[in-house]
Image 1 (spheres, rainbow over the protein chains, first blue to last red):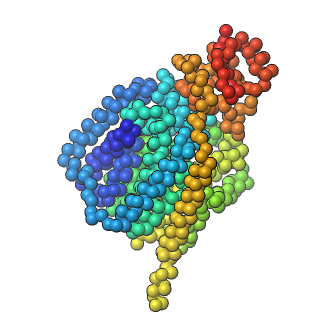
Image 2: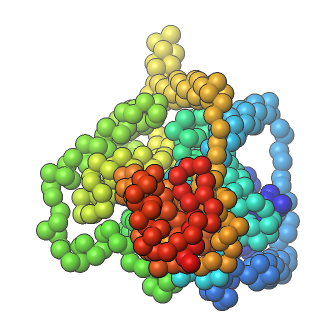
Length: 439
Length: 138
């Protein structure tokens, strides 16, 4: 039944994207399908959020009715474009079968590792899965989550992942421990597939496969992926945004940049880190769009998409969630005095040290050598968006670390730095291979 | 021949080779990890399983106090308190609040336990094998 819920979620995504693009989208079928899956997850989480706003607590019929109404509306809107939904298979090559076999074997390995970590890591059960339980079982879930449960559950964190799991529960009534386990497994296997299809759009098939294989075989990606944290979802949305942004630069199609904005907006509903990432990537994309010959239509589409995607987060942050206890109050009360330059440089050195940890299997070196060999390519036209994002994001993280009071700096770095890298990893692989191999 | 060699050692080929090597290294690391997991054959208990026996007494109970003599801080992952919160949700667990009808005492310190029971006029409802017990106010 959990898989049935994922199929429904997929249909919400594909019908919406199909209606948006009608006959204009120049994108491979598998990539379109993959991005529809990602988009569907967001729609379902937002529909669940809407049901909670309307009824104040878990209401299974309401969630199902909202989803059915959404599907019915988009089935109606897609009236004349169903032919675009059918898969178009070309001649199946031996290499494609080999690649599918490799991904299947890796998926079995991921499943095996995940059953050793069935209930997820500390953050998973103490934060995300606890919130899912509260959403489903409590009579006053928002009050319990925002005011009554312990501060370590980060009451201010957006609720995309718990809401998505709640939506799956509404359709499957499955065991509460089983839902995040299956969600995580699917997403961990899915992200490298998305990376592969995304890269295949721009570079040679075999190189795209190597990049996808590097991610699905990456031990740290797999270990972190199956811990049931929201960072995986963040990584998938960031990767999807990158794919849409670079897809836009290839064809200047305003609907593509609208979707990039939409994905960036929805990304803010996953985690607070998503707000920072989305803000920075939106800024650099906006600056890139300004440089276009006729920027107004693209900028308009981008801002519309971003605005729509931001609505759930704005409602959440303005009307529901308490303020972040670690960062904003400190900045407003003590201002910049709290910032210590020596600690800032300590954090920067910690960033470098993290890449040397053996769990990362020295893959950062490969990306670094790629960067050195293709140095100029990383700063050409739209490519500069990526490098600006990654550098400015790490600087922002260093600033947040050095202006936060909870725990020592060592504790912050130890508990969160690897997760930040993990969320960036799929996008960094995509970006490096895109810049280096694209003719 | 020179052209062939030049093509062979082009930047792109070097990076492709490095990617393949990195992929092989990752695959070996992953394989070794899986084998070590298989050898260890460790159990994977549900977080907070210690408190499963308390659930039947706490149906429809809004909140429970949690009194402990153990350290509660983020460095120690807040001990058993967070596990109790996860296992017993949606019941809210309030650390240090002795005013609730139900109270969990988490301690192996007999003096602390006896004093808490006396001061709050409590009767034991049930306990587990891990040093926690559920009490009800008389």
